[in-house]
Image (cartoon, rainbow, N blue to C red; front, top):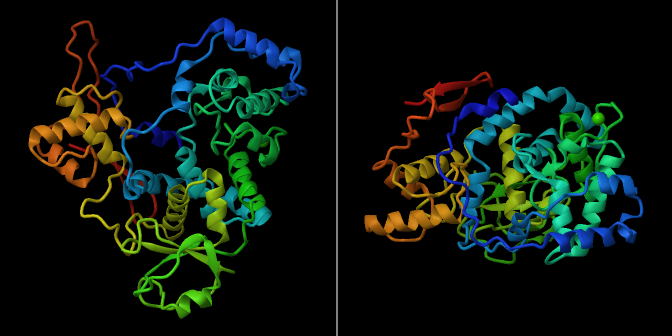
Length: 438
Ligand code: CA
């Protein structure tokens, strides 16, 4: 995977994200809290030596800001989906499927979980191991243990993180992850790690950071322990043919029921009887794509408690199974302005930077800063102002502003090599080629 990581060379020219609303956290209060913490029941199995060795010197206020972050803009389900399941992720997934084929076969034999279902989780969780999170876990969890909401939950995760290094499974330098403490290729919380991580490559350590075999087997173990049914699909796309009754993932019925309601596969064929029972998932209402989802979809859901998230895993798994890069559903999303993938998102961000907006990093993630800049640009262009980065806005701005990276003008800056942006193209034989973009 590594060799595919630096494909799109992004030079960060902008200033880092604005640190305007950072809470101020008292260092002495932090250490007083930690002094008390180490003698509490949650830390019973953490040695004093371990506790002190990984004790952070200062709290990290950015994690408290993340804890209380309220998104300024509501994201449509098709935008969320398009950003998670794009052609880039499918191409990366097909490479991962080939690279890990032998391991995935052995995992399927041991845990009864389909290879593509494991791959779907891996791809959505960490972009196949490319995005693990860079925040120091001990600092994040210690800060969350001592300030603001949900301290008792984070105290137990902090203790669990310390137990993981104490057990020797993960080296301390690898204990980095999301602001909330999820880490490794599977983005397990420390408690999930202690419950479900496995050593699959047999080196005696459960290393979900550096061992893809351990990470994939742990994912399969997770799905299995959450009720995965071997041999069942997660579900499939259907068409309603006028059905207007109850829906919902939890409202499960036998397939025969849905068949009697007139629901069919998108091409009109009858529903396959390959799930014990299924619920009708309508992520954007009855005019959007429809899915019958079974128990295995619920196991994806249990990874992150979001149906949109589970659908991204499911859809990615299906594309990887059929080796298709067409990310569209048979029934399109009910919008005349479809969502964009990360490549288009990066192009929008670069164009906004080139137009003089200080939107932070070009990371393909449309956050509040980017959306505020989009609103301003829309206002200037006299189009409707919603701050949304969809296909229409992508067409608008890229027809007017270059998406090429600009370079610093300072003479003290050494000559920069010309950054080339590559487009990944999936060849018929399954390999991936890189085509330089003009
Ligand atoms: Ca191992």
